[in-house]
Amino acid sequence: MQISISEDKNPLATVAAGHAARTLRKILQEQGHARLIAATGASQFEFLDFLTAAPDIDWLRVEMFHLDEYVGLPITHPASFRKYLLERLINKTKIKTYHLLNGEADPNESALQIGKELSAAPIDVAFVGIGENGHLAFNDPPADFQAEAPYIVVELDEACRRQQVNEGWFATLADVPKRAISMTVRQILKSKEIIAVVPDMRKARAVKACLEGEISPMSPASILRQHANTTLYLDKDSASLLKTETVAGL
Image 1 (cartoon, rainbow, N blue to C red):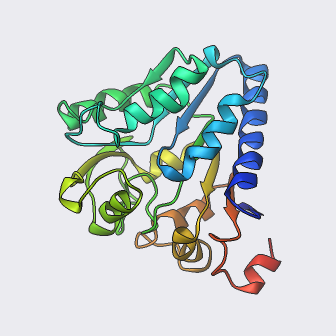
Image 2: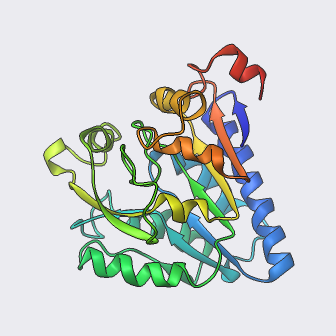
């Protein structure tokens, strides 16, 4: 794992988006088509703003999947990840080939159908974040590190659901759905490259557990240390609890 620490979330997003843009250009030049996974959430705002503004990416040759979606949430809801991706990535870049999980329909059927599309060919690059509880996608602790399916329906823990309230997506905890469709940990790790964008002080404990704790389902994002081509982008806030020797070794 490669780790980059920036002064705050804006330079972090600039550097991470520059990396992502170079990766996409290289893939498109070498193989003519790119398949990517896009994350959502407040931590990805600046990253996606900079990435969608990057020049010389032929988005018409990019195929997009997303990590997760709430079960039962309409696409019109502000917290809908389909809505998020349409507004912040798809409509901005004019991506024509994209696969959105439909949590309003049968979630197991949506997971199965989109999973078949996802498994049809390798994923070139995945953009991910890390939750305050250490989750990767919506794989809350204890995460299932063994599930082979591309997507599964999961129960969301209270820490995850409270994060959504604190970020302003929902008014109360009772409003947050209790289930979601999530890409599995094993599927995420199949990506040829992973770019993790993790700013803000509220992620500091999760970052510390990810980098300094055991690789464990209780700290789902810690599994990223086993991926051969992952870059973790932090700012000084999200890196603030790391030991001096950890930072010195970066």
